[in-house]
Length: 291
Image 1 (cartoon, one colour):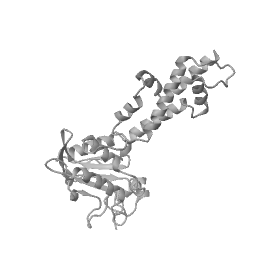
Image 2 (cartoon, rainbow, N blue to C red):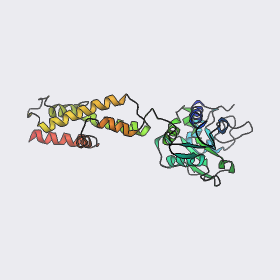
Image 3 (tube, helix red, strand yellow):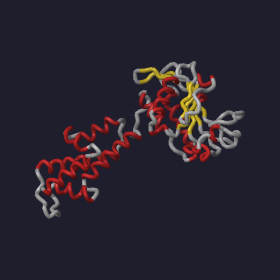
Image 4 (cartoon, rainbow, N blue to C red):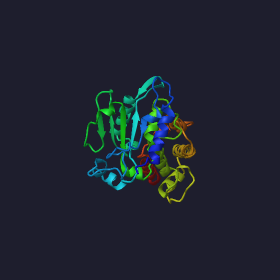
């Protein structure tokens, strides 16, 4: 029979942990967060393979759903709430609009969401559909918001909490201990760019060691100019800082930036981070070494 998958149960637990008993006139109750449809429910993402119907849109419209069909439901309903946090009042409509905005922007942690059926004002019902096939829903969505997830993501057990953690963090109900996907990507990009300079590949190794005055393998080698040697030292220091940061948790991106910039001048950091820097430095060093 249709079952609630672990990854959607984890989302349910997360939302209730922070919105149930939250400050405000109307918190989110456990009965208002559902995954599996009631016994009479047939068809749609709240149903697993035992309850889908012929031509079910939750199966036939996407290869992701066809490939991922199991007994697991692939939907989450969130009921009404009105809580106060971070100096503001937050409601089901504002939550829904925030989630739809993230989906519309194609944020990395929304790409397993097929659709959101919601009301922006408690009256009009709208539907955001990643496949662009529908734009509305029934009137029950005036008082609850429906999330459908592509079935292959549910089958794979992929964590669906990051989007909802970001929402809770954005309204001040959660102190995020893990970096967001965007922050991880940012740090990985910086790490990759600096790796070229700090000697983790043959070209970077030769040029950086020359800049540091530590390598005379080239026949036309000349001692490093003090400016280049200083740049090499700054790059090395920055790489060390990034390595230390990689094993730590931060609450937000500014904390990461502050950690990276600590003790280094803005001018040298600005020169070190752009993706094209490695090639520019290598070209300049090559020009000077053969001059």
